[in-house]
Length: 369
Ligand code: HEC
Ligand code: HEC
Image (tube, rainbow, N blue to C red; front, top):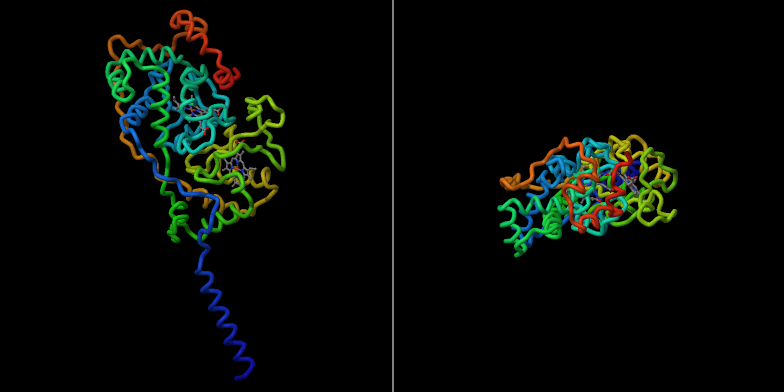
């Protein structure tokens, strides 16, 4: 055979081999992101009770704001606002993170000041900038509703409702708000065509550029505190000092709990100050500030495409119908011009409440009006 035709055959074989290889896509191999496991419900009655409380605006002073107002389960568990709107239209100090998959977080809040969901759930009810109620008033209100008393009794076996049961039930409900079965998880579990070539490319860039060093595990985040602005400083008007607000240590300034990237397609705007409106912007900033990388338009678009594969099955639940107020239930007065101190004098005579009021956690969350 002539050399030329030999070469031609070799080339053709090589070309064939390389197309065969191109079809052979990268397959998951010990990736640092893990699939989300479906919720295991141990006590359905407790979860159902928690769902009612989650949707019940009577846990707020105005009778208008529920957990779902700011963590709307029709909107990825967020309010899609830069910062939340609280009691009397107050401007919140920080972006509301999603409640979806929050059970996977190693601590709660941007600065980790609550150790778990149960501890967290007490915060917003008494936070003057959010639901602006008190635990005593909330519990008093629930105890005036016979159906609630009955339901709590069934779940916890006690005659009276207390705040511990309330936060426990809400946390049990939140434990169920996981979003398994995203296209990316299907890919991780061996369904090769669950993501497109572009999405796969985006994932490999995300992984190899080093995003996965902070955004990993089942929640693709939520497992460490990290500095916002590793390579370059993050410029923001937001006053949050991050973890330093809890520890008082200078070294913790701008250290935040790494947010989950699950359902990130739904949870805009981004960052603790809600300053980034689009994923494109967030990816650009992350690349530059955390890794010192400037992505090309194409790389950025690929990463964004990958991030959208992290949207999982949203909670599939029936809208809970909450028990009606009884004749004895105090009616809300959202427009009352009562100063906080007066509310305490008139409606919270107990010493116990006073003890609860100046909690450091509640103060910190209050807007700096
Ligand atoms: C007025 C808006 C508002 C209401 C009402 C509200 N939240 Fe939040 N929530 C926020 C904001 C803002 C944050 C972040 C605060 C921070 O990190 O300092 C937050 C944080 C959280 C977190 C922590 C998530 C994480 O990733 O760290 C959970 C869980 C949560 N809220 C659940 C609830 C529950 C349960 C209720 C009802 C009892 C509730 N929220 C009511 C705005 C609200
Ligand atoms: C050094 C750790 C670290 C690395 C590396 C990192 N991130 Fe982040 N990421 C964070 C922290 C911390 C935040 C929260 C910052 C804030 O809100 O101020 C965050 C926030 C985000 C958000 C916004 C999420 C939300 O809900 O607000 C996105 C999107 C994101 N990162 C994507 C990426 C991508 C893409 C990369 C790689 C280019 C990356 N991150 C690399 C730590 C990191």
